[in-house]
Image 1 (cartoon, rainbow, N blue to C red):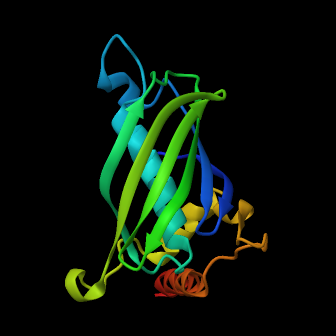
Image 2 (image 1 turned 45 degrees about the horizontal axis):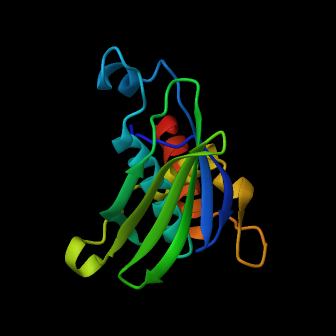
Length: 185
């Protein structure tokens, strides 16, 4: 199981910006274990939520084919804490994108009040040095993006709807065929 620290996309504009939400629930294990007696959402997971929002934003334009990893947290300023019952809004804005990586500025708010500001650097890992295996099976990533409702809100810079990449749809179809074939045996 992979951990996602965002609940849903509310906005996605290719190579420009993305907005997600994260609902803070008292029943989440990190809240209970992080600092007993003072339940709040760990700052490290807020950074990870922004990294997931920004990482998906900068890797979508290439059909999620590039291995995209968080390479650097240049800035992370927290103004207060997030507690159970809060809904965080995470906004990632692409500042710069090059063939080797991207720089994303992020801000997190709760009820319109600034919680955190950050700047994250992402690296695109090349197949020559890091192998040609994917970090996530395409059909699994596609399923996750659908759960997060990314394709429900995703548009390009001209406002045209973004569809799931064909290679991910084909991987999904192949996985379904494999399951049907395995059941027949």
